[in-house]
Amino acid sequence: MERAVVQVTLFGLLLVLASTLPNKDDWNIYSFHINSTVTSRYATTVITSRVANRMDDSKEIEFQVRIPKNAFISKFRMFIDGQVYDGVVKGKEKAQQQYTEAVSLGQSAGLVSSVGRTLEEFKTSVTVAAHKKVTFELTYEELLKRKLGKYELQIHARPMQPVKDFKVDVYINEKAGINFVEVKGGLSTKALANAITRTHADKQAWVYFYPTEDQQKTCDGCGEQGMNGDLVIVYDVNRDTSLGDIKTSTGYFVHHFAPSSLSRIPKNVVFVIDQSGSMSGRKMQQTRIALIHILNDLAEDDHFGLITFDSSIFHWKRELVQANKKNLESAKTFARNIQDRGTTDINAAVLEGARMLNAHPREGSASIIILLTDGDPTSGETNLERIQSNVRRDIADKFPLYCLGFGHDVNFEFLEKMSLQNNGVARRIYEDSDADLQLKGFYDEVATPLLTDVTMIYNGGTNLTQTNFSQYYNGSEIVVAGQITDNDIETFTPQVVAISRDRKVTFSDTNATMEYTGTDFDSHVQRVWAYLTVKQLLEKELLLSGPEKENVKKEALELSLKYSFVTPLTSMVVTKPLGEKTDVLHKPKEGGTTQGHSTGVPLPPPVQHPCV
Ligand SMILES: *[C@@H]1O[C@H](CO)[C@@H](O)[C@H](O)[C@H]1NC(C)=O
Ligand SMILES: *[C@@H]1O[C@H](CO)[C@@H](O)[C@H](O)[C@H]1NC(C)=O
Ligand SMILES: *[C@@H]1O[C@H](CO)[C@@H](O)[C@H](O)[C@H]1NC(C)=O
Ligand SMILES: *[C@@H]1O[C@H](CO)[C@@H](O)[C@H](O)[C@H]1NC(C)=O
Ligand SMILES: *[C@@H]1O[C@H](CO)[C@@H](O)[C@H](O)[C@H]1NC(C)=O
Image (cartoon, rainbow, N blue to C red; front, top):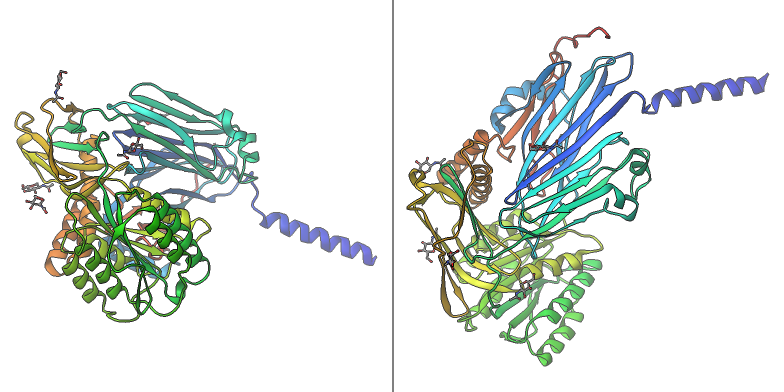
C-alpha cells in the first residue's frame, strides 16, 4: 500500500518534470541558412531561420543569434502566415520615448548584448499560432579589416537545435584576385571536414558548410542542442599595383591601399608597463612572458625603451638604446623581474615615455609608444582630462600612442579617447589564459612600419573619410571612401604621398585599376562609404564636446537612419502581430552594459488562426 503511494508520487513527479522540460517536438527549426556575400571586403550576411509550431496551442518562438561586434544590423523581418513584419530603425532617443510607457510596463530583457570578445547576441521572439510557421530574417553588414596579412569573416552557428536543412554559404568576390582562402574556427574540425567545401577561382571563392543532422549532434562542442561554434573564413587578396584597388559607383568611391613591396622602417618603441598592485598574479606573469617574446622579435636596427610604473617610475634605461643582443638580454632580465606593487600614475608614466621618444632622433624611423594598464589613474595626476591634455601636449602628433586595457577594471573609454587623440588605437586585452598571446598579437600588428606620414589625396573627391595616417604597417590596410564631385570620373585623381625611411614617396598610377560597379543605391561602394563615415563620426564624437559634439552626433544619426544601420545612436524596433509586446533593440557600447528592452504593451490577445 505504502509502496504504491510512493510509486504514484514518483510517477506524478516524473510527469511534472516531463511537462516542464522543453519538448523538442514543440517547435521545430526545419531550415537554418546563413548566407554571406563579401564584395571588396564588405560582407553582407543574411541569417534565415524557419520554424514550425507543431503544437495544438499557440507558442512563443524565440530567435537568438550571434553576430560580430564590428557589424551593423541593417534589416530584420519576420514572415508569419503570409504577413511580413519589417523591423524599423529609429533614432535611439525617439524609439525610447515612443516606447517609454511600454518599457516601464514590461520587464527589461537584454536583446542585443555583448558575448565574449567579438560577438553580440540578437534575441527576439514572437507568438506563433498552432501548426503555423514563422521565418526570421536578419541582415548585418561589416567591412572586414586586414590584420597580419589577412581578412577574417567570423560566422557563428548556433541554431539551438539540430536542423535538417542547415547551410552556411559564403561567396567572396574580389576583383584584385584572391591569394588564399582557409577555413578555421571551432567548427572546422576533423569530424566536420567532409561537411565543408571550399572552391577557389581567380577572383571568386566559395565556402559551403552543410553538416548533416547527425554531425550537428556529434561534433566538438555540439550536443542535443545542435551546433554551437564558429566558422572563420580567412583570406587575402593579391596586391600588384602600388596605388591599390579603387572602386567606384555612381558618385562614390572606395580605395584600398596596402602596398606590399616596401622595405621596413626601423622603429623606436617605448613600452610603458603598469606594475601596480592590481596587476598581481597571472596578469603580471603573462605580461612578463609577452614582453620577453616581443623583445626577442625586435630587429637589430630598432631602438627601444622600457619603463614600468606604479606610483613611481622605474627605468630599465633612461634613454632609448639599440636592440642589440647585449641590450636585449639585459632588458629581458629586467622584464623577468617586474613585480607588482603600489598604485597607478598613468600621467607621469606616459609623459616619461614621450620624453624618451622626444629625446631620441626620429629621422628615418617610426616612433611608437605602447601603454599597458589594467586600471584607472590613482596617484599623481588623476584628473582624466588633465592627463589627456598633458599627453597630447607632449606627444604633439609626432608619434602614435597605443593603449592596451588589460581586464575589465580599466576605464576603456578614457584609454580609447587618449589613443584617438594621439593617432593611435586602444585595444582590450581579455583576462584569460591567452592574454600573453593577445599582447604579442597586438605588437605584431605594429611591429613592421612601412610608411610614415601617409596622406591620401583625392582631387575631385569630397566628403572623404579619414585621409591622414601617421603610420602604415605591414599586414594592415588603409581604406578611404568618399564621394566623387559631380560624379566626374575624368577629373577624379587619387594619389598617395608618404615617407619611406627618409625618402618622400608618391603613389599615383595613371592607369590604376579603377573599377565601375554600377548605379545602385544599394551598391556596396556607397554602403562602405556610409559604414566608414558613421564609424569615424562615432569616434570623433567621443573627442568633442558642446555644440560640435551635437553636430557630429546629428550627422552620424542621419546617416545611420538613411542606411538603416543599428549603431549606438539608433534602435531597431521589431514590429509584431497585433497584441504582442514590442521589442526595441540597441547596440551595446564596447565594455558597456546591456541596454535592450522588451516592452509589455497591453494589447488585445493575438488573433488565432484556424488550423489548416
Ligand atoms: C545568397 O545571397 C546572395 C545575394 O543576396 C544571393 O544572390 C544568393 O542567391 C544567396 N544564396 C543562397 C544560397 O541563398
Ligand atoms: C610583410 O609581410 C609579408 C608576409 O605577410 C612578408 O612576406 C614580407 O616580407 C613582409 N615585409 C617586410 C618588409 O617585413
Ligand atoms: C557632402 O558634402 C557637401 C559639401 O561638400 C555637403 O553639402 C553634403 O551635405 C555632403 N553630403 C553628405 C551626405 O554628407
Ligand atoms: C593631412 O596632412 C596634410 C599634409 O601632411 C595636411 O596639410 C592636412 O592639413 C592634413 N589634414 C588633416 C585633416 O589633418
Ligand atoms: C599602365 O598600363 C600599361 C599597360 O598595361 C603598363 O605598361 C604600364 O606600366 C602601366 N603604368 C603604370 C604606372 O602602372
